[in-house]
Length: 256
Ligand code: 21W
Image (cartoon, rainbow, N blue to C red; front, side, top):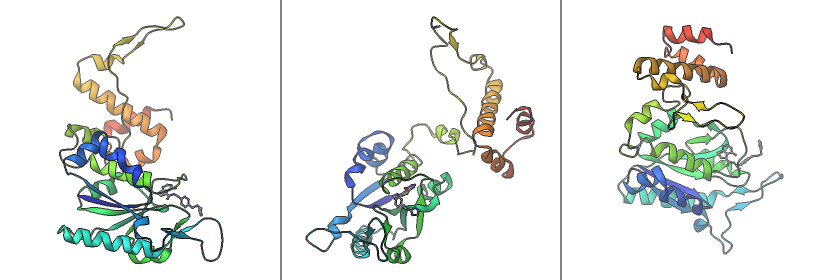
């Protein structure tokens, strides 16, 4: 798959290609990322890509014409590579929140053109003519769409075949079954006591070797944590029929 990223800050994307799971995705060609510096598509000596908003007000607006030239160059490049025309995703605080379902759909697709906004926003005429979808990361204010684009590509890359070593870790993830994850423990079994307290041990059930009991304990931890922190996810799991009779019984025992 391929991502074409339109940005004023291509430097921000370097670590994606040089570190960790996303580097592996990149090197294995599971995800091909091409960065397009919007300033290269300006038409004046100052490489201007923004201007003041009609009607007044604070901030600057990204200009239609450089964006259209960038898009045209990307479409030409995609066609030359024999690829399909990819949808345009714009990152905006006014977009729909990104979900794992949307991430999965993108991972199963040939890719997308990602437009990273800066300034107050993008001239609406470009949005109306070319943007297929507006995506937000949530209700807090960032300074532009680059970190959201990196977030989306990270979430997609780890779903591409061959990128994660352990296929089971997909399945167990928070959100892949709609509940938050259970707690995890590793060595040592007992942490030495400080002067003032007791040693901190691993929950005994995890050392029991009883795999059915361990699975039940983990499920109950997931249910309890989700019910406390994200009750709406319990409601959604119930609506999907994803809660067993045992799950429901356990939830009734919780003091929320
Ligand atoms: C932040 C641009 C605020 C414009 C309401 C009415 C992309 C983002 C961004 C930015 C404003 C995302 C206003 C979560 C984000 C992004 C830069 C508008 C004035 N508010 N997801 N008028 N949060 N942010 N501010 O900020 O480009 S995805």
